Image 1 (tube, rainbow, N blue to C red):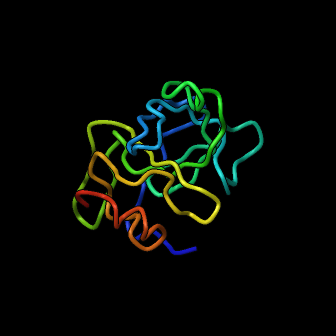
Image 2 (image 1 turned 60 degrees about the vertical axis):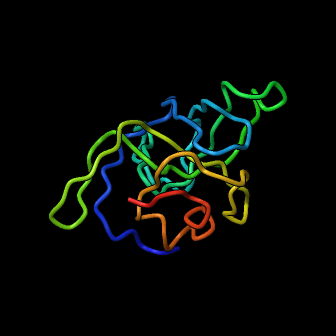
Length: 131
């Protein structure tokens, strides 16, 4: 797996709710697990931009509500450092992916962080803007 060039602050924990930013049918999702998290005993694992998380769909199409899917985090409210700049977004958002890191939807509604470019090129290709 490729390294992320920025220093990402990991602020999204288990039970955090995110906006699903693609047209797969989910609207609001809740984080139920962080894939590949190495956490200390009794410490809740956290995630940031570029991390793959297991989510439960809370709002959306009726056939999708309650399903468990994989998602990649594309935006977070908490600022993070990229070089000498600090970048933050206005909401926490994710995109649903499958086992091969391909997006489930065909288009993405909002902008996406540039740190996803090496790990998820297909997600970047369908995004309208990359910040």
